[in-house]
Image (tube, rainbow, N blue to C red; front, side):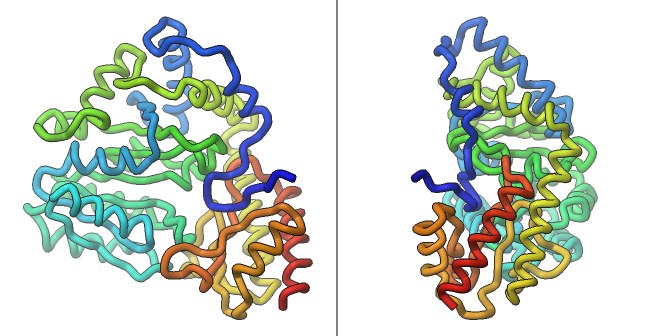
Length: 360
């Protein structure tokens, strides 16, 4: 029996999406591909909240995250860090041999506006980029995006790069309105596609910055992406089957309606939060900063998390996550992203109730 995924990514992929991937192959420099690429733009621009082109990269989001460092950092970068993935972005900055400064919070605590302002004010003239993960999946923590964007706006020479990998299409994010310079996401989270695509948009001033950086590489060269986007193409060979699936997914989102999609994700998430409380657990992130994409559950009851995960999969063919990095086993994570509904979440919670009775 196939295992149904309730992990933070990749998430469950529907039969409809698999069927969309099976369309006949086309040439990636053909008019058919140009038409396909062009047809995606209105949908993607609406989701990104920008009139700028949305680029398609055959890569994980980490490719674009590293690309942003190589394309945009001239002086130095402030990495906002409060979990495994945002901490890793700092490591990427260091490996790219950039002057990298930490804006650090404890895991499960948000990055606060006053904290970021203090770092930027102290490093004025030394840094010109800030990186932020909107929704830190490792800890289930949602950073206060609007407040942090306002802080960066007060430093005119600083560009803001935001990872929305696990919040994109879960909640509204208006790139243009917020003043985000690079907004990026991946295919395998809330979009409920297989891994392998990243999507991103950049501001005009980010494009102008990139043009002045001589060692930005090729595969993730923002100038190459812009040049090819004007021709309705990608710089290198794209994963066409995944792009067929993306087109179908965007049509599916339009059929549901964006506001309905946002509401469904919030409803699913609130069901999970209620279950956490009813079972006597606690959420790991600081109250008021909980993710809408998943729950990261603090194991305050000291249950055997590996046994919980294994038994749930063996008995019900449901897979949840046993925690990530240094909080593995201290927490466990349950995703509500993608195609999940209140009905599927309720079925999962019923199975979890049964397994907890068995192992406690």
